[in-house]
Length: 238
Image (cartoon, rainbow, N blue to C red; front, side, top):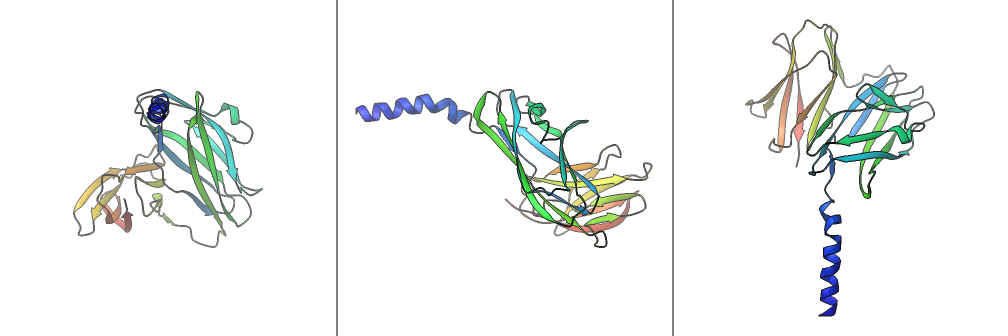
């Protein structure tokens, strides 16, 4: 009986810790940088504060095998930091339930053909048990090899990533002709329309929440001024 009382006492004491277990979710699965020698790539990191409290996180560490000619920067809005030099300056504040979409990783591909991975660990400034990790991979290609991009007169559009996707699927793009109307249309395997997204010429990333999609194969199509340009496959998993 005494042991049982001690057990429930510990459960009561640890209840706040368990209640804090689910804090910030990283919705950007499998962040990947792939590009030519000397190029720079930017990826959006989408976070969601799933708690009912304001959360402030500090960058705790950058770990991985980033090559000597590669460089990663962390950008919050228009302000960018070098995680190796500005560790103490990188701070993220999320309101209760907030979906944060203005956090970016910028990766300079460097001058050597290589591949590797790294991760960024963020910790709650008031609770060291509360942390999350952003994982990323990179691959630097020779410029003679074609990268997974559609490069047209009016737009450059990356392939969707990650693919397969579980929660968030993303496109990177650059609309070169600001007067063109660009959009991405998603259809089911049998051709039923699922969603339609207009590409904002002032932005460079389109995140799509596929968490509510049924698992399976979908097709996305790029339209320029309502003209079908290209169609590719998107796989959604649970």
